[in-house]
Length: 261
Ligand SMILES: Cc1cc2nc3c(=O)[nH]c(=O)nc-3n(C[C@H](O)[C@H](O)[C@H](O)COP(=O)(O)OP(=O)(O)OC[C@H]3O[C@@H](n4cnc5c(N)ncnc54)[C@H](O)[C@@H]3O)c2cc1C
Ligand code: FES
Image 1 (cartoon, rainbow, N blue to C red):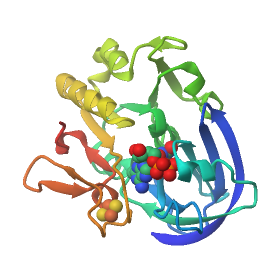
Image 2: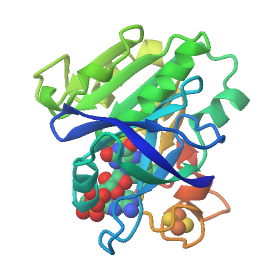
Image 3: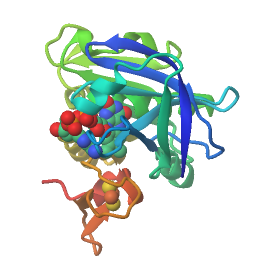
């Protein structure tokens, strides 16, 4: 983890209130899918805290990296105004990654189901790309409320992708868990990776229990320091250790470790 400054290469509006921010990755620590960075959005006192975002892409040859963010409040509204050449104050890469689990435990599994919802889409695009580069055939499932929130332009055409919309305006009508259930025969032989709103993660976890698949989730908590120092991001876990820090021990966890409420 390092603090560094980086120039904005480009900022594009890719769906309703969703932006793709490309910038130079000016540090030697290579970010992996699931890891995040924090950005100081202003030199003024408000917003005071750095804002956390997961990496949505990284290119080791060009040292370019990207995040996809949704404009939801003050900090992200400032980011949405950035111009090419503006300087970003970044801390990263932070947290663990999906790769930590995949490499150590899932070497023999052939089906990789990557599930994304809303602001969880960025890291899952990165994970699906990484799986593809290592010779796997990931199935990417993206859930959205409606078609105008789907970031079509950043999807990799070489990756099999299913879009689910709650209102049926595009693709499968229903949420991602409905889709998983509709293909449970295939998915029970898979490992499932998810990032998105908590009800989606919970649904994926209980689906994985029903079909006997492994499931990994990337959790999102309000964060203050983002580096494990303040205990502001704890979540309840099963087992001996009752609480864990999402920023330092996660954000990626095996779904059975999480106490779902
Ligand atoms: C590990 C991690 C990865 C994330 N990755 C992404 C991503 O790839 N793309 C994306 O769009 N968003 C991501 N988020 C959420 C993003 O950090 C918040 O949307 C952002 O901080 C909101 O800032 P704001 O000032 O615009 O909003 P605010 O006006 O401060 O708040 C709006 C809402 O944003 C959330 N929020 C605010 N501050 C934080 C904070 N410090 N930590 C967590 N949530 C906060 C709260 O739910 C709040 O209700 C991630 C969060 C975490 C913890
Ligand atoms: S945000 Fe401070 S410990 Fe996680």
